[in-house]
Each structure stands twice: as structure tokens, then as C-alpha cells.
Length: 347
Image 1 (cartoon, rainbow, N blue to C red):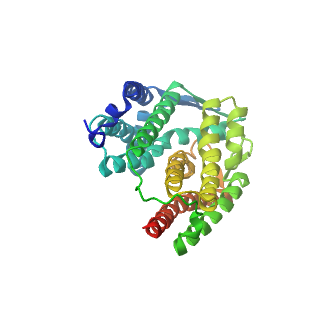
Image 2: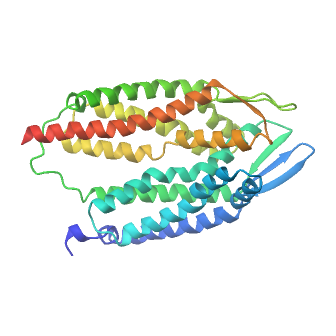
Image 3: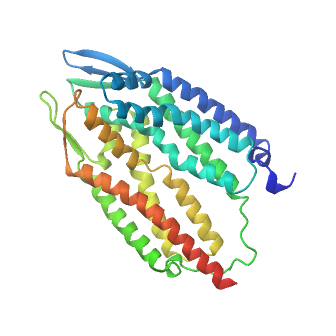
């Protein structure tokens, strides 16, 4: 069979079976995460209550919060199974070509939004940390769900990386090492300016609190993005500490710095394309936008449990997430324009 018509499963050889096995494990964990309890919330005098993902959706719907229920159903119930099915189809059936590349790109971009409900759990656990009148205890369901989503995200990136090997650079591609910022014109200047703003906002969001507890009998703790992993670690919740450290701090920082490096450091056209593919894969793990939506959902329906005051850091977090997205969107287009100019100059 010609290489151009091979599926990813055939191209991966024996490793393709391990990829499918991992996808099957992710499917099993996804089902477990859907059915098992996620969280137990205990409030002084009122007692405790267990919540699973499906029960949370049911309570939201019964409470008249239909939009919120639909968001969680779409992002955290339906889409994870859709993604697993689409990944299996792309892996086993789709031959090399733009269609497969676009399918894998979209699965990568949308995959992190399955983390909406776990990040909502993180918000509740965060606010209940170091309190005596309210406690939030995570159960096996949330860890099964997190593992399933993280596994499918990793498998999606693996499939995209293997698919990228099918893309052949032009034989006339220049060997000259060129700084991309010099070839991207006004679009490149705009992308670099947006990147600088995003980086400044991110640094501010790390330290500025986004909310503060405001409730009788509870300590008035305030939290910024940078303090979330530390608070989770101090509370002994290492999986959520790892999730917040990676998704809220490390990956956004790496993405912003990698984009700056990609603009400034000279490279060949082939190396520039490889850099931006890697930046796109790293960006898939940036969770600031998902966290912003989770905080918004909590402010709309979670203050019956713990009342909070919104701080300026929340708007800074929203602005950072928006500018991070804009820097990626604009940067990809500016980089493509610069690469077209480099290719054109070599012809």
C-alpha cells in the first residue's frame, strides 16, 4: 500500500495496537468517571452530600439552570465520547490528507474543554481548603475522569504528530536560517504586540486574587492563579495540584515563551513549521480559558455552598485567556504569511 494512502494504524505498525489499547482504557475510565461519585461537600450543621457528574447535571436542570446543565452535558458528558469515537475513526480509517489533518487539529483544540467539570470541582475544593465549617472531599470518579481526558488528549497529540510526518516539505524549501519576525510584515508585528500583552497579563494574573471568601464562620482566603497549585498541594490533593500547576501555570508560560522564541530565533522554513506545530500541541494543555468558564459557572450556581467576592484578578484572568487565544490565532496566521514569503523568495 502506498504511504500516501496508509492509515495511521498501519503506519504505526505494532505500536498502533498499544495506541488503540490506551484509547480503550480511556473509554473505560470515561464511563467510570461518568458513574462514580466526584465530590462530597459537607457543610456545618447541614451535613454532607455526594455528587457525581450526572447527579450534578440533574440538580442543575431541576433548579432551572438549563444553560449550565447543557454546557456541562455538552463539554463533559457527550464530547469526551465523541472525541474517542472520532479519534478511533481517524486512526483506523482515514488516509493521509488534509481531511485527517483537520479532524485531528479540531479534536486537539476542543479536547481540553472536557476539563470543565473537573475544574469546577477544583474551585470548590480550593475554597473549602483550610476551612472547618465546609469541607470538600474528592472521590475516585474525578480522578478516573481526569485520567481519561488527559489520556485522550495525549493520544490526540500522538496521532497528530504521526500525521505530521506525512506532510512533505517542498524540495525547493530554502536552507537559509531566517528570523520569522523579519518576514511576517505588519501581521507579524501585530502578533508580537498581542503576545507581549498576553505575557504581561499572565504575569499579573499569577499574583492578583480572582476571588475571596466572604462568609460567616469561614476564613477569608483569597486566591490568584499562581496560588492555586500551592493550596491544592497543602491540602494534600496532589492530582488537582498537578492539574492546576500544569494547566494554569506551566503550559501557558511555556506557550508564551515558546512563541516569543519562535519569532526571534532564526531557523529554516522546515524548522519554523515544526516549531509552530509543537506550540499548537503545547497550547492544547493551557486551561486558563476553561478555568475562567468554570469560575463563571461557580459564581452563577455555587454560591449557595460558599459565598465569595469577585476580585479584580478574575477580569485579569479572563483578559489573559482571551489574549492567549488571540496570540495563538494571530500568531499562526502571521507565521503562515512569513513562511509563504520565505518559500516565495526561494522560487
